[in-house]
Length: 56
Image (tube, rainbow, N blue to C red):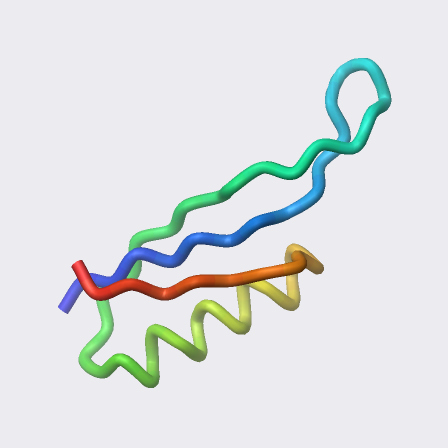
């Protein structure tokens, strides 16, 4: 089953200013818990403020 993971992260733009952006990932896993784990993994890597996992 496919799940969409949305992460809100702060990134620096070309002017050196921090801006909040939303990154999207699509993952193919068997269970929602696996999608949540992938979301947590991406969150830890990106050091973001919020994550949201949604069934597609």
